[in-house]
Length: 208
Image (cartoon, rainbow, N blue to C red; front, side, top):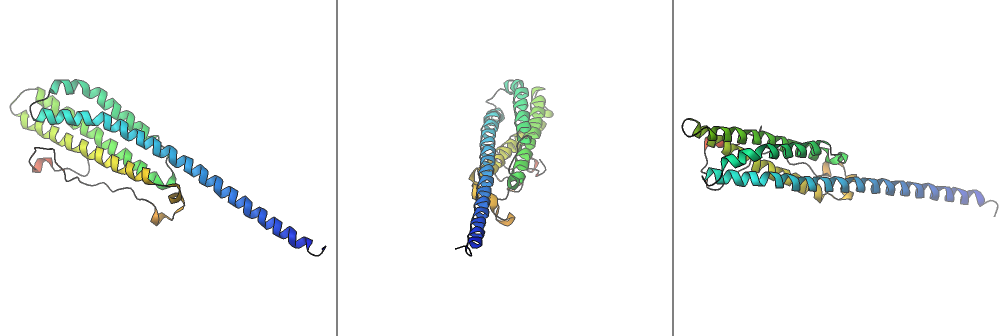
C-alpha cells in the first residue's frame, strides 16, 4: 500500500495538470468566442447603417439621371450623408477584430473610403449640373454616373465582407492560417446602372 502511494500521487498530479489545461483552453475559447461575437455584431450594425445611408443617394442619382429627380434636394442632403459615411468609417477603424479577421476589418475601411471618394464625385457632378446645361452637361452626367457605380460597388463589396465575417464560427479561430476565411480581394464590378449603356468613360477604376 505504501509502495503504491507515489504512483497515485503522480497520477493525481497528471490529472490535475490535464484538468488545468482543459480549463485554460476552455477559458481561451470562451474569450475568443465573445470577441468574435462582438465583432460580428458590430460589423452587422455597421452594414445596416452604411446601407441605410447610401441606398437613398443611389436611388436619387438614378432618378436624377432619368431627369425625374431633384438635384438641388440631393445636393442639400449630401453634407449630412457625407458626415454619416465618415462616422461609419471612424467606427470601422475603431473595430477590434480577432486576429484572423484583421484583413476583413481593413477591407471594410477600404470600401468606406471608396464611398467617401464616390460622394466627392457625386458632389462634383451635382455642382456641374446645377450650373446649367451646355459644356458641363457631359461632365456632370459622367461624374454622377461614376459616383453611383462606385457607391453601388462599395455597398456590395462591404456586404460581401460582412457575410464572410458573420459566417465565421468560433472553431475557425483555432484553424491554421491556410484554412481561415480570406477577405475578398478588391475587384471591378460587372454590373451597370439600370438603363445605362456601357461606355468607356464610366469603366470602374479599381483604385477607386
